[in-house]
Length: 275
Ligand code: BG6
Image 1 (tube, rainbow, N blue to C red):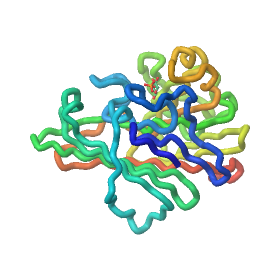
Image 2: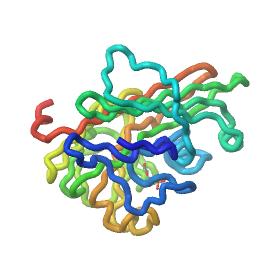
Image 3: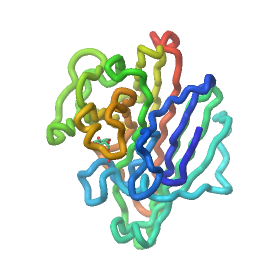
């Protein structure tokens, strides 16, 4: 696993065979002002572009610091390795988002190699003011061929379609498959979502907590060509399924804390059927 302080950004997660599981664009510069394209950008304090901040908020464009003295794991959790990162108030950001806060991210590897992300966001305002935010783990999964990928767990749910002015629709039919650009925010999703990569016979299983929504995004060919930090053909090898809290923003009073969690396993497909 590899984590950049720039963005508090997980850029690599491998299985026991050394195979990369996250997509990372070959066009990255890994430098501000462009957030890293791929891996797991953290969208905070705003998901998308519907608020007053830059698209997906500023956290993915800031340098986080490592907590040298992290709190211990709860006794019922086993982890092989972890790092705690912190992003906090700065005078510069206060001009665009006038709040004091502490945003913590724990990135951990579970015993089976699972990737576990836990975020804690605390309102540390001293002026008595609440703040409101939206959030996403903008995870880019590496897939062998997007047209052979299926997503299970979102069928029959309501979603907002970003390609149709965020209009609300209901998903019909079976598992979700991909044959053109998609940019949807699925609402009130189950805690478990699966991404099946048939070519590689691998299934990513996402388990989430505190993150009711799930964004599904693939830019497809035209948009891929228009993005300077993304290869023309790279859309074939990635799919974003983002555990998120978008529809109902979170409000914290001073002293209050929010916690969100995402656990991802990558398992051979046969292990997954019937689970
Ligand atoms: C997705 C959004 O989460 O991120 C899309 O739903 C957006 O609308 C995509 O295009 C990429 O965003 P960005 O800012 O990283 O180019």
